[in-house]
Length: 217
Image (cartoon, rainbow, N blue to C red; front, side, top):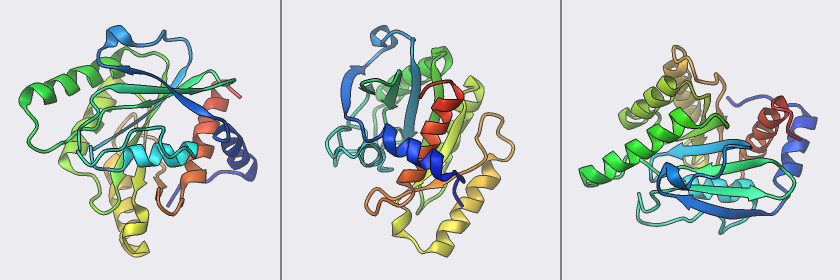
């Protein structure tokens, strides 16, 4: 089901996210981006996929990423950092919000497209998919954007506690099949639950491995 890591890699992820993380800035357009000097790990997903909850669980800080009962509320790239590690976590604005004005959708598309195509420090995008629904057409559109931009990305299944194990495996199998011919996709999935903590250590470890590959402790 999920990516396989060694105990040492999991421990490195644990140490990385023991640190205190802080909000740096919200970026409504590329003019406000911080200098492209350190690695960036971004999180993308539909506006009700549980992205903010996952980020908060990842860093063990319940209020770091803003959660809202109104899908699509946050329409900026939100940057977070921790002392001593040259990297940013980036919370990308949610997509697929219902009944959004065309201008709002166009603004999201423009901001995200520009960021994906023009950010050399972007190491990976973790694309969050709701385990209960699998990859929907709106998600496939974002997969196309990521492939076109040649940005490495990996699927993270959220809310894995909400469905039985056999149904989760079926969704994972469908996702793997959908990714098989996509050039920028990382082949292994990570299934998570922000409520139970399932898979969160695996995600921490995966990020740590990715940073180690770039020479970042």
